[in-house]
Image 1 (cartoon, helix red, strand yellow):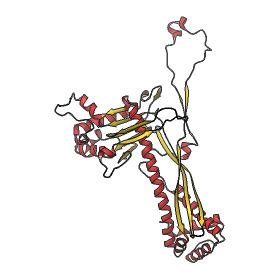
Image 2 (tube, helix red, strand yellow; image 1 turned 180 degrees about the horizontal axis):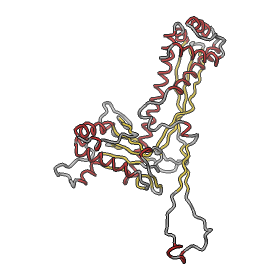
Image 3 (cartoon, one colour; image 1 turned 90 degrees about the horizontal axis):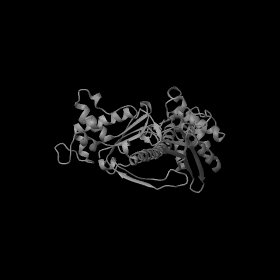
Image 4 (tube, one colour; image 1 turned 120 degrees about the vertical axis):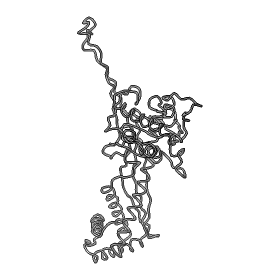
Length: 395
Protein backbone atom coordinates (compact mmCIF):
# COMPACT_ATOMS: atom_id res chain seq x y z
CA UNK A 1 0.00 0.00 0.00
CA UNK A 2 1.45 3.47 -0.87
CA UNK A 3 2.72 5.58 2.03
CA UNK A 4 1.74 9.23 2.57
CA UNK A 5 4.67 10.71 0.62
CA UNK A 6 4.01 8.40 -2.30
CA UNK A 7 0.35 9.45 -2.35
CA UNK A 8 1.32 13.13 -2.37
CA UNK A 9 3.80 12.53 -5.16
CA UNK A 10 1.23 10.67 -7.28
CA UNK A 11 -1.41 13.38 -6.78
CA UNK A 12 1.03 16.17 -7.65
CA UNK A 13 2.09 14.34 -10.81
CA UNK A 14 -1.55 13.89 -11.81
CA UNK A 15 -2.24 17.55 -11.02
CA UNK A 16 0.50 18.67 -13.41
CA UNK A 17 -0.61 16.30 -16.14
CA UNK A 18 -4.34 17.08 -15.91
CA UNK A 19 -3.78 20.84 -15.31
CA UNK A 20 -6.54 21.03 -12.69
CA UNK A 21 -5.37 24.30 -11.14
CA UNK A 22 -5.20 22.70 -7.67
CA UNK A 23 -2.32 23.55 -5.31
CA UNK A 24 0.51 21.13 -4.66
CA UNK A 25 -0.15 18.60 -1.91
CA UNK A 26 2.42 18.74 0.88
CA UNK A 27 0.34 18.34 4.06
CA UNK A 28 -2.93 16.79 5.23
CA UNK A 29 -4.62 20.19 4.91
CA UNK A 30 -3.47 20.47 1.30
CA UNK A 31 -4.75 16.94 0.74
CA UNK A 32 -8.31 17.78 1.87
CA UNK A 33 -8.28 21.02 -0.14
CA UNK A 34 -7.08 19.11 -3.20
CA UNK A 35 -9.98 16.67 -2.85
CA UNK A 36 -12.49 19.50 -2.70
CA UNK A 37 -11.02 21.02 -5.86
CA UNK A 38 -11.22 17.74 -7.77
CA UNK A 39 -14.80 17.10 -6.60
CA UNK A 40 -15.89 20.49 -7.92
CA UNK A 41 -14.40 19.98 -11.40
CA UNK A 42 -16.65 19.82 -14.44
CA UNK A 43 -17.42 16.46 -16.04
CA UNK A 44 -14.71 17.07 -18.61
CA UNK A 45 -12.26 18.06 -15.87
CA UNK A 46 -13.03 14.91 -13.86
CA UNK A 47 -12.54 12.75 -16.92
CA UNK A 48 -9.18 14.40 -17.56
CA UNK A 49 -8.13 13.89 -13.93
CA UNK A 50 -9.24 10.26 -13.88
CA UNK A 51 -7.41 9.58 -17.14
CA UNK A 52 -4.22 11.07 -15.69
CA UNK A 53 -4.70 9.01 -12.52
CA UNK A 54 -4.98 5.72 -14.42
CA UNK A 55 -2.07 6.65 -16.65
CA UNK A 56 0.05 7.40 -13.59
CA UNK A 57 -0.90 4.12 -11.92
CA UNK A 58 -0.14 2.24 -15.11
CA UNK A 59 3.28 3.85 -15.26
CA UNK A 60 3.94 3.02 -11.61
CA UNK A 61 3.20 -0.66 -12.26
CA UNK A 62 5.39 -0.87 -15.35
CA UNK A 63 8.36 1.03 -13.90
CA UNK A 64 8.42 -0.38 -10.39
CA UNK A 65 7.25 -3.98 -10.62
CA UNK A 66 9.05 -6.81 -12.36
CA UNK A 67 7.04 -9.77 -13.63
CA UNK A 68 7.16 -12.44 -10.96
CA UNK A 69 4.66 -15.05 -12.19
CA UNK A 70 6.60 -18.30 -12.27
CA UNK A 71 5.05 -19.46 -15.50
CA UNK A 72 6.09 -16.25 -17.26
CA UNK A 73 9.67 -15.55 -16.15
CA UNK A 74 11.46 -18.30 -18.18
CA UNK A 75 9.78 -17.17 -21.40
CA UNK A 76 9.36 -13.43 -20.97
CA UNK A 77 11.36 -11.05 -23.13
CA UNK A 78 11.25 -7.28 -22.87
CA UNK A 79 9.67 -5.41 -25.80
CA UNK A 80 13.18 -4.20 -26.71
CA UNK A 81 14.49 -7.79 -26.84
CA UNK A 82 11.46 -8.94 -28.80
CA UNK A 83 11.45 -6.12 -31.34
CA UNK A 84 8.62 -4.75 -33.45
CA UNK A 85 8.55 -7.97 -35.46
CA UNK A 86 10.73 -10.85 -34.36
CA UNK A 87 12.98 -11.79 -37.26
CA UNK A 88 15.34 -14.75 -37.24
CA UNK A 89 17.94 -15.33 -39.96
CA UNK A 90 19.61 -18.72 -40.26
CA UNK A 91 22.59 -19.48 -42.49
CA UNK A 92 23.33 -23.14 -43.08
CA UNK A 93 26.80 -24.27 -42.06
CA UNK A 94 29.18 -24.99 -44.92
CA UNK A 95 30.82 -28.41 -45.28
CA UNK A 96 34.58 -28.78 -44.96
CA UNK A 97 36.25 -30.87 -47.72
CA UNK A 98 39.68 -32.15 -48.50
CA UNK A 99 42.02 -29.66 -50.15
CA UNK A 100 43.07 -31.45 -53.34
CA UNK A 101 45.82 -28.89 -53.93
CA UNK A 102 48.00 -31.00 -51.66
CA UNK A 103 47.01 -34.56 -52.59
CA UNK A 104 45.87 -34.35 -56.22
CA UNK A 105 46.35 -30.95 -57.90
CA UNK A 106 44.67 -32.23 -61.09
CA UNK A 107 41.36 -32.32 -59.24
CA UNK A 108 41.47 -28.65 -58.25
CA UNK A 109 38.75 -26.51 -59.86
CA UNK A 110 39.96 -24.51 -62.81
CA UNK A 111 37.49 -21.73 -62.04
CA UNK A 112 38.40 -20.09 -58.72
CA UNK A 113 35.73 -17.45 -59.36
CA UNK A 114 32.86 -19.97 -59.29
CA UNK A 115 30.29 -18.76 -56.71
CA UNK A 116 29.62 -20.73 -53.56
CA UNK A 117 25.91 -20.89 -52.78
CA UNK A 118 25.35 -20.31 -49.04
CA UNK A 119 21.69 -21.04 -48.15
CA UNK A 120 20.16 -18.38 -45.90
CA UNK A 121 16.65 -18.48 -44.46
CA UNK A 122 14.58 -15.74 -42.86
CA UNK A 123 11.70 -16.36 -40.45
CA UNK A 124 9.26 -13.74 -39.18
CA UNK A 125 7.19 -14.30 -36.04
CA UNK A 126 4.18 -12.00 -35.89
CA UNK A 127 1.63 -13.74 -33.66
CA UNK A 128 -0.10 -11.34 -31.30
CA UNK A 129 -3.34 -10.66 -29.46
CA UNK A 130 -4.74 -7.42 -28.07
CA UNK A 131 -6.85 -7.39 -24.91
CA UNK A 132 -8.46 -4.91 -22.58
CA UNK A 133 -9.46 -4.83 -18.91
CA UNK A 134 -12.57 -2.79 -18.12
CA UNK A 135 -13.12 -1.00 -14.82
CA UNK A 136 -15.57 1.55 -13.40
CA UNK A 137 -14.96 4.06 -10.58
CA UNK A 138 -17.98 5.93 -9.12
CA UNK A 139 -17.53 9.58 -8.12
CA UNK A 140 -18.59 8.75 -4.57
CA UNK A 141 -15.62 6.39 -4.25
CA UNK A 142 -13.26 9.20 -5.20
CA UNK A 143 -14.86 11.60 -2.70
CA UNK A 144 -14.51 9.02 0.06
CA UNK A 145 -10.86 8.47 -0.83
CA UNK A 146 -10.06 12.15 -0.29
CA UNK A 147 -11.24 12.12 3.34
CA UNK A 148 -7.86 10.81 4.54
CA UNK A 149 -4.48 9.68 3.30
CA UNK A 150 -5.21 6.15 4.52
CA UNK A 151 -8.39 5.90 2.44
CA UNK A 152 -6.60 7.32 -0.60
CA UNK A 153 -3.86 4.71 -0.11
CA UNK A 154 -6.49 1.96 -0.03
CA UNK A 155 -8.16 3.45 -3.11
CA UNK A 156 -4.93 3.55 -5.12
CA UNK A 157 -3.92 0.08 -3.94
CA UNK A 158 -7.23 -1.41 -5.04
CA UNK A 159 -6.82 0.11 -8.50
CA UNK A 160 -3.25 -1.16 -8.86
CA UNK A 161 -3.98 -4.59 -7.42
CA UNK A 162 -6.95 -5.42 -9.62
CA UNK A 163 -5.14 -4.31 -12.77
CA UNK A 164 -1.96 -6.12 -11.78
CA UNK A 165 -3.72 -9.38 -10.98
CA UNK A 166 -5.62 -9.34 -14.27
CA UNK A 167 -2.45 -8.76 -16.27
CA UNK A 168 -0.55 -11.46 -14.37
CA UNK A 169 -3.29 -14.00 -14.99
CA UNK A 170 -3.42 -13.19 -18.70
CA UNK A 171 0.36 -13.49 -19.03
CA UNK A 172 0.37 -16.79 -17.12
CA UNK A 173 -2.21 -18.25 -19.46
CA UNK A 174 -0.21 -17.12 -22.48
CA UNK A 175 2.99 -18.60 -21.03
CA UNK A 176 1.27 -21.95 -20.43
CA UNK A 177 -0.03 -22.06 -24.01
CA UNK A 178 3.35 -21.03 -25.45
CA UNK A 179 5.20 -23.71 -23.47
CA UNK A 180 2.57 -26.35 -24.30
CA UNK A 181 2.87 -25.45 -27.99
CA UNK A 182 6.63 -26.00 -27.84
CA UNK A 183 6.07 -29.35 -26.13
CA UNK A 184 3.53 -30.36 -28.79
CA UNK A 185 5.76 -29.43 -31.71
CA UNK A 186 8.70 -31.22 -30.13
CA UNK A 187 6.70 -34.36 -29.37
CA UNK A 188 5.24 -34.52 -32.88
CA UNK A 189 8.73 -34.19 -34.38
CA UNK A 190 9.60 -37.48 -32.66
CA UNK A 191 12.98 -39.18 -32.91
CA UNK A 192 15.61 -38.20 -30.37
CA UNK A 193 13.51 -35.15 -29.44
CA UNK A 194 11.19 -37.44 -27.44
CA UNK A 195 12.49 -39.60 -24.59
CA UNK A 196 9.95 -42.19 -23.44
CA UNK A 197 11.47 -42.87 -20.06
CA UNK A 198 9.56 -46.01 -19.03
CA UNK A 199 10.06 -47.72 -22.39
CA UNK A 200 13.75 -46.77 -22.32
CA UNK A 201 14.07 -48.12 -18.77
CA UNK A 202 12.50 -51.48 -19.64
CA UNK A 203 14.75 -51.77 -22.69
CA UNK A 204 17.89 -50.89 -20.74
CA UNK A 205 17.03 -53.44 -18.03
CA UNK A 206 16.10 -56.12 -20.58
CA UNK A 207 12.56 -56.35 -19.21
CA UNK A 208 9.49 -57.52 -21.11
CA UNK A 209 5.83 -57.49 -20.16
CA UNK A 210 5.27 -60.14 -17.48
CA UNK A 211 8.85 -60.00 -16.15
CA UNK A 212 9.49 -59.12 -12.53
CA UNK A 213 10.40 -55.45 -12.30
CA UNK A 214 8.76 -54.56 -15.61
CA UNK A 215 7.21 -51.09 -15.54
CA UNK A 216 3.96 -50.31 -17.31
CA UNK A 217 4.26 -47.31 -19.65
CA UNK A 218 2.08 -44.28 -18.77
CA UNK A 219 1.42 -45.64 -15.25
CA UNK A 220 2.06 -42.85 -12.75
CA UNK A 221 3.10 -45.39 -10.09
CA UNK A 222 6.57 -45.29 -11.68
CA UNK A 223 7.05 -41.99 -9.84
CA UNK A 224 7.47 -44.01 -6.65
CA UNK A 225 10.07 -46.40 -8.08
CA UNK A 226 13.57 -45.40 -6.99
CA UNK A 227 15.34 -47.34 -9.72
CA UNK A 228 13.21 -45.69 -12.39
CA UNK A 229 13.72 -42.20 -10.92
CA UNK A 230 17.47 -42.77 -10.86
CA UNK A 231 17.38 -43.85 -14.50
CA UNK A 232 15.19 -40.88 -15.49
CA UNK A 233 17.51 -38.43 -13.77
CA UNK A 234 20.43 -39.92 -15.70
CA UNK A 235 18.59 -39.59 -19.03
CA UNK A 236 17.88 -35.90 -18.42
CA UNK A 237 21.51 -35.28 -17.47
CA UNK A 238 22.67 -37.06 -20.64
CA UNK A 239 20.33 -34.97 -22.79
CA UNK A 240 21.63 -31.73 -21.28
CA UNK A 241 25.20 -32.79 -22.09
CA UNK A 242 24.30 -33.80 -25.64
CA UNK A 243 22.49 -30.61 -26.69
CA UNK A 244 25.69 -28.67 -26.03
CA UNK A 245 27.27 -30.27 -29.11
CA UNK A 246 26.29 -28.99 -32.53
CA UNK A 247 23.98 -31.33 -34.44
CA UNK A 248 20.59 -31.63 -36.12
CA UNK A 249 19.47 -34.42 -33.78
CA UNK A 250 17.57 -32.26 -31.30
CA UNK A 251 16.58 -29.38 -33.58
CA UNK A 252 15.24 -29.84 -37.09
CA UNK A 253 16.66 -31.23 -40.29
CA UNK A 254 19.13 -28.84 -41.94
CA UNK A 255 19.40 -26.76 -38.75
CA UNK A 256 22.60 -27.50 -36.87
CA UNK A 257 22.19 -26.20 -33.34
CA UNK A 258 23.95 -26.30 -29.99
CA UNK A 259 22.76 -25.07 -26.60
CA UNK A 260 25.32 -24.16 -23.96
CA UNK A 261 24.17 -24.36 -20.35
CA UNK A 262 23.69 -20.59 -20.07
CA UNK A 263 21.08 -20.75 -22.86
CA UNK A 264 19.38 -23.94 -21.68
CA UNK A 265 15.99 -23.91 -19.95
CA UNK A 266 14.75 -26.87 -17.92
CA UNK A 267 11.02 -27.17 -17.18
CA UNK A 268 9.86 -30.03 -14.99
CA UNK A 269 6.44 -31.10 -13.76
CA UNK A 270 6.21 -30.40 -10.03
CA UNK A 271 5.08 -33.88 -9.00
CA UNK A 272 7.99 -35.46 -10.90
CA UNK A 273 10.50 -33.04 -9.37
CA UNK A 274 9.10 -33.75 -5.89
CA UNK A 275 9.25 -37.49 -6.52
CA UNK A 276 12.96 -37.27 -7.35
CA UNK A 277 13.59 -35.16 -4.25
CA UNK A 278 11.46 -37.24 -1.87
CA UNK A 279 12.01 -40.80 -3.05
CA UNK A 280 15.50 -40.55 -4.48
CA UNK A 281 17.66 -37.63 -3.38
CA UNK A 282 16.43 -37.55 0.25
CA UNK A 283 17.98 -40.92 1.17
CA UNK A 284 21.01 -40.77 -1.13
CA UNK A 285 24.39 -39.96 0.46
CA UNK A 286 25.58 -38.10 -2.65
CA UNK A 287 22.25 -36.52 -3.57
CA UNK A 288 23.97 -34.14 -6.01
CA UNK A 289 24.62 -37.12 -8.26
CA UNK A 290 20.93 -37.95 -8.71
CA UNK A 291 19.01 -34.70 -8.28
CA UNK A 292 17.59 -32.91 -11.28
CA UNK A 293 19.41 -29.86 -12.73
CA UNK A 294 18.83 -26.61 -10.84
CA UNK A 295 20.19 -24.10 -13.37
CA UNK A 296 17.53 -22.13 -15.28
CA UNK A 297 14.95 -24.46 -13.77
CA UNK A 298 11.21 -23.88 -13.85
CA UNK A 299 8.94 -26.13 -11.78
CA UNK A 300 5.51 -26.39 -13.41
CA UNK A 301 2.64 -27.45 -11.15
CA UNK A 302 0.84 -28.23 -14.43
CA UNK A 303 1.44 -27.70 -18.14
CA UNK A 304 -1.91 -26.42 -19.32
CA UNK A 305 -4.70 -27.11 -16.79
CA UNK A 306 -5.12 -28.21 -13.17
CA UNK A 307 -8.48 -29.95 -13.26
CA UNK A 308 -10.31 -29.93 -9.94
CA UNK A 309 -7.55 -31.60 -7.92
CA UNK A 310 -4.23 -31.44 -9.82
CA UNK A 311 -4.56 -35.11 -10.77
CA UNK A 312 -1.44 -36.38 -12.54
CA UNK A 313 -3.41 -37.31 -15.66
CA UNK A 314 -4.56 -33.70 -16.02
CA UNK A 315 -1.51 -31.79 -14.78
CA UNK A 316 0.83 -33.78 -17.05
CA UNK A 317 -1.39 -33.35 -20.13
CA UNK A 318 -1.39 -30.93 -23.02
CA UNK A 319 -4.42 -30.71 -25.29
CA UNK A 320 -4.29 -28.16 -28.07
CA UNK A 321 -4.56 -27.45 -31.76
CA UNK A 322 -1.70 -25.79 -33.60
CA UNK A 323 -2.53 -23.55 -36.53
CA UNK A 324 -0.23 -23.31 -39.58
CA UNK A 325 2.75 -20.98 -39.05
CA UNK A 326 2.77 -19.55 -42.58
CA UNK A 327 1.11 -16.21 -43.22
CA UNK A 328 -0.79 -17.73 -46.14
CA UNK A 329 -2.44 -20.26 -43.84
CA UNK A 330 -1.12 -23.14 -45.91
CA UNK A 331 -0.71 -26.50 -44.22
CA UNK A 332 -2.80 -28.68 -41.97
CA UNK A 333 -3.88 -27.97 -38.42
CA UNK A 334 -2.13 -30.16 -35.87
CA UNK A 335 -4.02 -31.57 -32.91
CA UNK A 336 -2.36 -33.26 -29.97
CA UNK A 337 -3.70 -34.58 -26.68
CA UNK A 338 -1.00 -36.25 -24.61
CA UNK A 339 -0.63 -36.97 -20.89
CA UNK A 340 2.39 -38.24 -18.97
CA UNK A 341 4.74 -35.39 -19.93
CA UNK A 342 7.16 -34.82 -17.06
CA UNK A 343 9.95 -32.58 -18.35
CA UNK A 344 11.18 -30.35 -21.16
CA UNK A 345 14.63 -29.02 -21.95
CA UNK A 346 14.98 -26.38 -24.62
CA UNK A 347 17.13 -23.57 -25.94
CA UNK A 348 16.12 -20.18 -24.53
CA UNK A 349 15.42 -19.03 -28.11
CA UNK A 350 12.93 -21.84 -28.77
CA UNK A 351 9.99 -19.87 -27.34
CA UNK A 352 9.23 -16.44 -25.98
CA UNK A 353 6.56 -13.87 -25.21
CA UNK A 354 6.28 -10.20 -24.40
CA UNK A 355 3.80 -7.54 -23.33
CA UNK A 356 3.91 -4.07 -24.83
CA UNK A 357 1.85 -1.04 -25.87
CA UNK A 358 0.34 -0.65 -22.40
CA UNK A 359 -2.18 2.20 -22.35
CA UNK A 360 -5.33 3.38 -20.55
CA UNK A 361 -8.40 5.05 -22.05
CA UNK A 362 -11.36 6.49 -20.12
CA UNK A 363 -14.75 8.11 -20.57
CA UNK A 364 -16.95 9.86 -17.99
CA UNK A 365 -20.64 8.90 -17.66
CA UNK A 366 -22.48 11.97 -16.27
CA UNK A 367 -25.78 10.14 -15.90
CA UNK A 368 -24.36 7.43 -13.63
CA UNK A 369 -21.67 9.75 -12.19
CA UNK A 370 -18.83 7.34 -12.80
CA UNK A 371 -15.80 6.93 -15.03
CA UNK A 372 -15.22 3.85 -17.18
CA UNK A 373 -11.62 2.78 -17.81
CA UNK A 374 -10.18 0.52 -20.47
CA UNK A 375 -6.72 -0.90 -19.81
CA UNK A 376 -5.29 -2.13 -23.10
CA UNK A 377 -2.12 -4.00 -24.04
CA UNK A 378 -0.65 -6.25 -26.71
CA UNK A 379 0.72 -9.73 -26.07
CA UNK A 380 3.05 -11.37 -28.57
CA UNK A 381 4.60 -14.82 -28.61
CA UNK A 382 6.47 -17.30 -30.79
CA UNK A 383 7.60 -20.94 -30.91
CA UNK A 384 10.69 -21.77 -32.98
CA UNK A 385 10.83 -25.50 -33.64
CA UNK A 386 14.25 -25.21 -35.33
CA UNK A 387 15.90 -24.76 -31.93
CA UNK A 388 16.99 -27.57 -29.64
CA UNK A 389 14.22 -29.10 -27.54
CA UNK A 390 13.62 -32.50 -25.90
CA UNK A 391 10.44 -33.76 -24.24
CA UNK A 392 10.44 -36.46 -21.53
CA UNK A 393 7.37 -38.64 -20.88
CA UNK A 394 6.58 -41.69 -18.74
CA UNK A 395 5.49 -43.67 -21.78
